[in-house]
Image 1: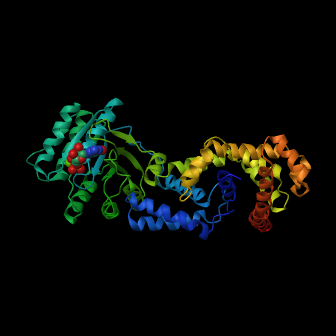
Image 2 (image 1 turned 30 degrees about the horizontal axis):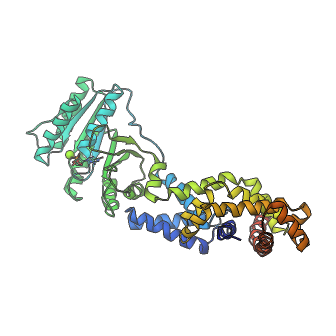
Length: 438
Ligand code: GDP
Ligand code: MG
């Protein structure tokens, strides 16, 4: 058999179920990827423990490698954890809704004030901005510039040193002017400190914002857990906005922040302009963090192709030793979809060498020859290849238009594979029976 076909055999030999043993490599790959995405180490550890517990015992599709099945489970779990989707600002029907933005200095609070204003204006809602960052002299001016650009009123009191008062006065003004939303642009620090937290707590308590959002710089790495944890402890957060995801950052901080705060991720910032604010979508972010979208896609495709009923039927046959060349042919026809095999090979560590082989004309030809040879067999021969003697081999080869050794090797390979498959599938079926008895 051609090399390509041999690897096709290999890929058919799924391992039945995910076990600690066959997940080890896959888990290592996933862990490495998460750390590279800058997910905080303790969060990675928690996640790995959680996901391996979830994946353990899950069935592996015959045409998939354990790690591919695992990666799909990991991806789905990431989506699950990063969710739910909630980019609503939960505006009240009456009176101004007060939104407070907080976060470290430079995280993008002031810019996000502008972005949210733009968003609201597009929906015909009138916002007002309140300059409550009294730490940096230029902060008030920065907000005024944004207000002018967007034609949104900005409330500030340059001589007032009390941010609580400024916020209260700002809210009163917003009420008087009929603004539907007030956004408080608060101060940040380069690092967490108690004075800052005390100030924010005071605003939270005295002004009573309806929504408190933590703004996090998406380029933050390992430190994201600490800062988000500190904000989360001091304030009752309602959501997270992660900025600067327009760069190379893979956004691992998002997983860390979500892990610590547990609140919905509302928006992501994808640029310096005011229209660069997108509602958060867990699917896109999961694949960005994991960067294994191709494997996930191939795994999904494989699941789609081999539906459950068919699989059960095949496995039952394999377990009982009834697995025939005819069944084998059906499997080959399924996995021999153009591009699918090559794609999967290319994605498997160490299997890259087979990618070209699988995509080559030769490999496709090999699979076609195999299918053709089986087609030339009678049903009796497909059920029991032992009856195929030299004379039958020649007949089959002629019928399929292949060389006789192609037929001989196919039969030999099948005889080797059959007991292996029976062993693997038998286990799965046995376990199922045991479960049904419980
Ligand atoms: P603040 O200190 O939290 O108010 O942060 P600023 O709003 O002043 O933003 C700090 C810097 O980050 C500015 O140069 C912004 O232009 C930039 N910035 C904010 N959001 C984004 C974003 O989503 N993408 C990019 N590339 N830059 C951003
Ligand atoms: Mg600012």
